[in-house]
Length: 240
Image 1 (spheres, rainbow, N blue to C red):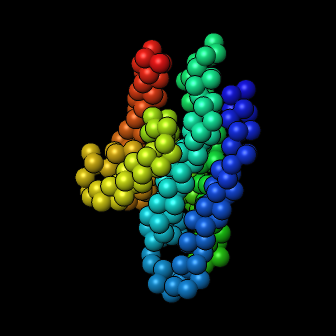
Image 2 (image 1 turned 135 degrees about the vertical axis):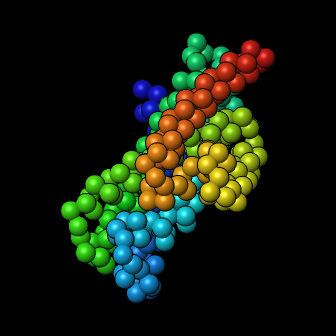
Image 3 (image 1 turned 90 degrees about the vertical axis):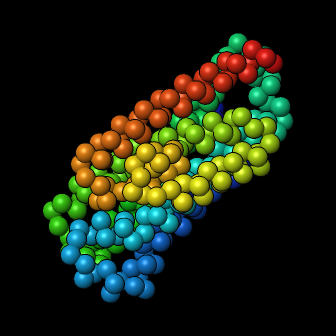
């Protein structure tokens, strides 16, 4: 019920068109790159998915993270703009229910983003490279890995947005976090666990043990951020 309610709320904003347009724009990156520079990549002796992700994923993931940050700010701006969140606090409902309803919507549109981009990468692999039996499985594994590492970003972006009544403050903090993540050395495992840096990671750049560590870290961070949000909401409500 909360998911449906939150979905109806964002329908009155530019939330859904922004994610759809952003997903198409991100998906166009590998297509345009291959259309104009295919000779650079077709001779590389590696799996097509790995070649395409190594060449394009940093830009694509940047689009994804920025869209998540903007989307989170839009969702909470609709609550703060007309004082709706203050009115809701007078009702016998938990504010955390609203938060997790927004999380569900943001995860759903993030899946849509990744699905559009996965289709683009798969299409480029089929069109410009030789199709192997492993192509389908490699594509699905990458999709699942990206989704898991996107979860801490979604939770963290929404937590930041929920703390600021001014959308521009939350947006500014989120954008600063994104650009800080781009400056983190990819060789430093601990620093790359920063929630806004996790989505930049790809399967082919790491060993199986490191991939498992990233997956575990993503799951743990998601739970910890969710618990932190619940604690913040309880403390904030006790002082209002």
